[in-house]
Length: 370
Image (tube, rainbow, N blue to C red; front, side, top):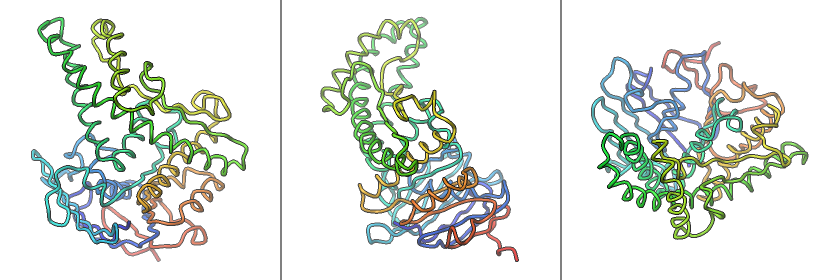
């Protein structure tokens, strides 16, 4: 899996950009606020049509522009693919793969998959549950299109149910449809739990091995999936998960009406992390939590490779500058294989990293400084 060429028009601070990439290593350099992260964001967008920094497509379009366009040539599954994404203010996006309109954004991940690692991810262990859910969702959506459909459906239903619970006292008639939403949420929620449980099972095994290797066998990392309390084993068939979610909904029905918010379902899931049997969020040192975050991201990449027999694109957004020398060396050694994109103010020493270096200034590709 390789991204061979990318063209941007009207994307963030890029008026126009055409760039060919090295099949293995690409270092994107420049001072702060020149567009390095914007370029990495565009590459990630090619795999999911989602941004880790923007709440909507309109934020991705340049301030003075009415539309943005991303055009890419990629190699995947021993085939060449042309990808084009058009964003227009006030209109729906358009995605084409080999000049055929895509039915949904999920089709992109069948061509390109990306693992993005930015400085914020170094706090993944200490952050709130929402950030860990986002990490899981981004990974699983690329591997399992059915998960993306179930998750989107669940989130839409959750929004509707939340409005019902918020407004039911002013409009008691809303309660007549509440059971219908509970039923639909339990069915899509069971799929969400099912896919998360199986992914976390793989993640736990891979991340533990990476953490142990990095620490020289001194640290043991354990991951546990925390979901709806009436589900004792989230690896069970979805029919059982559905029944257990329904049970939880029934138990919390009165509390939800009183709280006017949805208290039951996988939208409250978490990934609980332990190092040597203790809560990493509460007790681990900063170095330990950073290593654990690195382990999660590197494990995600390796799961993608085992699952699809192709390395995903690895995007390291100014992460190396945040790491001490041993952790930086560990990451660079671990990411052999596949195509990698690294941003930073200065390129890594050539002895650490060999490949193509791109220099960005004010959204423009410039010649390297002499």
